[in-house]
Image 1 (cartoon, rainbow, N blue to C red):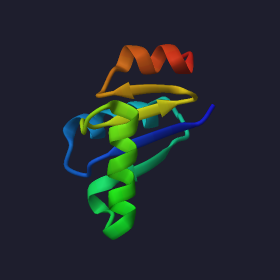
Image 2 (cartoon, rainbow, N blue to C red):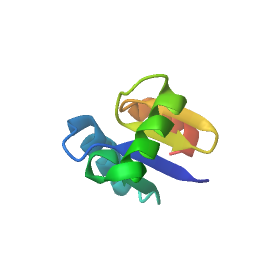
Image 3 (tube, helix red, strand yellow):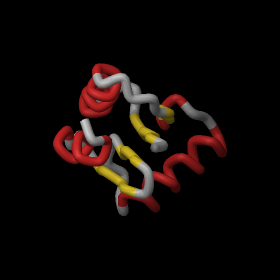
Length: 81
């Protein structure tokens, strides 16, 4: 199952999400939006808005499901942890 995290490098909930995934040996791709520049940053922000309906972080995509914010219970359910 594909897991992708849109995060900010300064966001505590983003760090908590990544730590939880790491502790459970979940492979995932991360996009640290605030560290991107130019069009890549604009594209990432547009994608976050499209997926979440806003600009909250983190945005976690597990398969076809989108989770906005750090929701340990939902992540656990979707990954079968």
